[in-house]
Image (cartoon, rainbow, N blue to C red; front, top):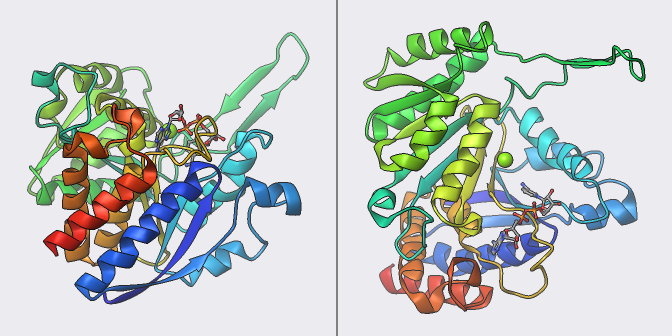
Amino acid sequence: MTSARVAAIPGDGIGTEVMDSAKAVLARLLPLTGDNIAWTDLDWSCERYLTEGALMPDDGLGLLREHDAVLLGAVGWPGVPDHVSLWGLLIPIRRMFQQYVNLRPVRVMEGVPSPLRPDLAEGVDLLIVRENSEGEYSEIGGRFGAGTPVESAFQQSVFTRTGVERIARFAAERAERRRGRIVAATKSNGIIHTMPFWDEVVAETTAHYSVETTFEHIDALAAKLVLHPARYDVVLGSNLFGDILSDLAAGVCGSIGIAPSANVDPTGTYPSMFEPVHGSAPDIAGRGIANPVGMLWSTVMMLEHLGAARAAGLLMEAIAETLRDPATRTADIGGTADTAAVTDAVISHVTRSA
Ligand code: NAI
Ligand code: MG
């Protein structure tokens, strides 16, 4: 990358605070590596919804389409139902832009207390690859006989060969660049149509790569991710299983405040979207104490995606350095630093090592 166009959607609550942090860091980092980002700042949020009746304008997706990536803070605020904020912004972006991969790297970082015993937490470095476009999260279904004694609800899962093959290929490519191991979450003993199909297509697809693929039932895998998280490399899951496992794995690492994520269209046809895992945190918003690390780590993923490998590496190293120092940790990970102090520390590590 030398120059990229990025749409910035700070959103609500601490989303705006961590966005400021990311932009401040990039303003100092990118000139050092000869990269440049042209920002488009978008005020799409619950606040906009309350004044204008929609989170984004009618031509919102068309506007985003002109960009190389989207960086998002968090969307959601008390007074606006969460399904409005989710279906009014995030889901349309993920679906329309074919962001069929949700990526969540999980690492126990030095200085971030894990709830696990230190001997278990040591060396945890895994990548959760979640199918992000089909599977269990479909609109197909409905309610039958509402208000009668036979009232029933039906919801259909959708697993397509195309959909499973492409997520399996993505997982295999990532695993080849890592430790070469994929564990795919399944439940083929209980869910007897879609899950055996998922297993079959994942096994066939990944057989073409230099990786070892094994299958674990989701329930057992959930336990093992807590008991022996360091054994895992790439964990591949359907939309539902991947969703649950990524929060579980983030919990293993100690704080939601540091967890990053990416919604990726690997074909590059549409912009991919990068966002911290956490939400708008109304309970601490406006106080300047949010942990910006989840956002900064998401920014690392964005830089990698845009091909700015050197900038990404420098930023990740600066984040790790900052977390190592007790004086530059926020309250959610046991420190007393505020957002600005963490941001300044990251900037000073970046400028020193560049
Ligand atoms: P949340 O992630 O906003 O907060 C959960 C808890 O973690 C809170 O106690 C909060 O203070 C703490 N926390 C979160 N991020 C932190 C950070 N960076 N530094 C320090 N502490 C942090 O989840 P919650 O409360 O369930 O949701 C609040 C709003 O955010 C809701 O409207 C929800 O819909 C929305 N949300 C949006 C997401 C998105 O934009 N992708 C994801 C999750 C929630
Ligand atoms: Mg989730």
